[in-house]
Every structure is written in structure tokens, then in C-alpha cells.
Image (cartoon, rainbow, N blue to C red; front, top):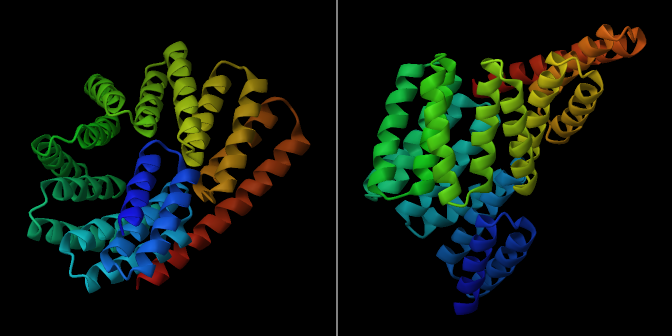
Length: 329
């Protein structure tokens, strides 16, 4: 059992360092040993971390299967804290699938269990996720309340990473309200804390937001610098969706500067990555911008092809939304 626990800790360490291949290898071996010794809680913890790993890799089906099995074992082991943490990850999965009703129910249940387990950090994480959900629904007042409470709990729990993530979301909220000075101050503070916490993905997301903010202010040099750094960090963190979104923003920036060759290169690469992670909304936008670009360069055949593909992608996206709505009923 000692070897299994050591492998689990090693896998968790590799996860924190974004070394996902080594993490998966260590956790799979830990799971084999915990299963062999009939350690139910050990198995559940291995599966929970593996589920989070699959989430990070954007492999949602595998993540759901793993996290659901972990939840069954946590329930069997009567671990309230384990169930709460697992539900938080499942809620994140439902958010990624844009199934907001299911996500809200899952986060709310996680919050109840974290409160029951007296986990301040758990409650903070649940509230942060509920705030993100309210943002997706454009309910900014509810989102601000949730983020502010989450930040208070993360400070109480002395979680630097948690505080940084709350601030990133609060910055997004102020961007939505067009209070750019306040947003910039918050993003800079988030970047400082993500750097302190050595979170590569966090730094990437902060820089992406700062790049968008500089574009809103029509400061293309600062925007390009921030987005280029964001892309480097997202690549380091192995975040395919993050890279795609950075490239999409860089494509828009190059279009504004009439640097059409660089814009075409950025949008084409963004399209490849959005297709890789099956992000229909991203694909649709990339195709539209490529169509606009080819129209601008009088390349009408290419323009027609991309705009036609854009219409097809939009249709598929709309069908997906209908299916998701039906599955919620």
C-alpha cells in the first residue's frame, strides 16, 4: 500500500508540473496496486486524479467514465469530502459540454457536501465554479457575489492559486461590464499570483485576457506581446483550446494591421486546433474570418469554400445545441 500511495503522490506532482504522460503512468500503476490490495479509498483517489487528467486533456468521455467510477467508490467508502471533490470535477465536465443545468445541480450538491465536511477550500472552489456558470448565463450580479465570496474563502484557506483563479474570473466580469481599468488591475494581480503559484496555465489565461484588453484599447503592440506570451504558456501547459483561442485573437490583430499572410496562418492553425478539440463555436468563427480574409484578397474560390464550410459548421453547431436541450428534458 505504501508503494501505491507514493505513486499516487508522484502522479499528482507530475499533474501539477503539467507532465501529463508521466502522471498518467504513475497513477495507472497506483490504481493497479490499490485495487490489488482492495483499498477502496485509494482506488477512488487514483481515479479522481486520472479523471482530472483526462479533463485537462479535453478527453471528456474518458473523464466522465473515470470520475463516475470514483464517485461510486467514494460513496462506498463513505467519504463525504471525496464525493464533494469528485462532484466538483463532474460539474466542470458538464460546463465544458455546455450542459449548464446539470452543472449547476452538481456544483450545488458539491457545495452542500463541502459545507458538511467543513472544507473551506472546497466551498471556495464550488463558489468559483458557480460564479463561472452565472457568467455563462450573463447573470453578472450573481456571478460577482459568488466570485467575491469564493475569494474570501480562498484567502481564509491561504490558497494562492485559488485567489488567482477568482481574480481572473472577476477580471472577465469587469471586461464584460466594460470597466477596463478595473479589469486590467485585477488581471495583473492574478498574473502575479499565478506566477507565485507556478501555474503555467493560469499565467497563460491571464496574458490572453490582457491581450484582449489591449486590443479593446487599440494598443496592438501590447496586445501582440501579451498574446504571444500566452501562446507560449498554453503550449507549455499542453492546452490545445488555449492555443487555438490565442491564435484566433492573433489572427484578428493581424487582420487589423492588414498583415493578411500572418492572419491566414494564425486562423488556419486555430481552425486545426479547434477541430482537434471538437470546439464547434471556435471552428465556426475561424472559418468565417478566413472567408472574410479571402474576400478581402479577391480569392473568391477560397472565400466561397470557407464560407460554405462555415454555414455547414454553424448548422452542425445548432443541431448539437438542440440535442443538448433535448437531453436536458
